[in-house]
Amino acid sequence: MSLVSIESPKHCAKQGLNVNKLSKKLFFASSAFFTTLLSLILIIWLILRPAKPEFSLKEADIYQLSLSAPNLLNSSIQLTLLSKNPNQKVGVYYDELQVYAAYRGQQITVDSPLPPFYQGHQDSNLLTASLVGTGLPVAPSFNYEVGRDQTAGKLVLNLRVNGRIRWKVGTWVSGRYRINVNCLAVMALGPTLPTGPLSSKQGTACYTTV
Image 1 (cartoon, rainbow, N blue to C red):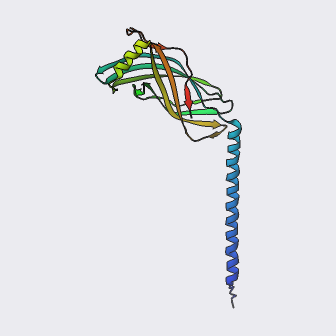
Image 2 (cartoon, one colour):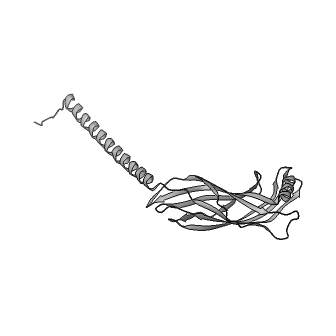
């Protein structure tokens, strides 16, 4: 005669309760681990407190800035920027950088991409870009504004860099943050246009937001 073991409903209920307790313990343990990890990253971040990158304009040269039609502009500008990472323990990845020039709120060149790069602790990099515009539409007042600048004796351009950056602390790399850089190039402009390029070499600091 074979023995048949029959478990009572109460016994089955106890087994189910033990499984639920184990799942809850695993859930709380994993939650505590991830909370501790995130807290550690936050503490390291607050201790290091990364400073935003610093940019300065080293040189800007305008080779062409003329109307090919009443409201269509041709432009050619060469610029050199100095980028510096002021942090002692934080590296910076630069992604998707685009550079363009603007005059009195009007974009006068197309976006020019810069290759992505990594900048180590307190490192500096020279960035060069050739900005061009062919048949770009501008406001009807463009010629008038340039004439006013000739009378004033100076031409002011905004050279802008937009893109994204990532911070690197040890082996940890952050998500992407938007960066916007605005540099002012002030160029001497007389009553007659010079045969050579208009140049700005004053090395002014740029305004950076992250």
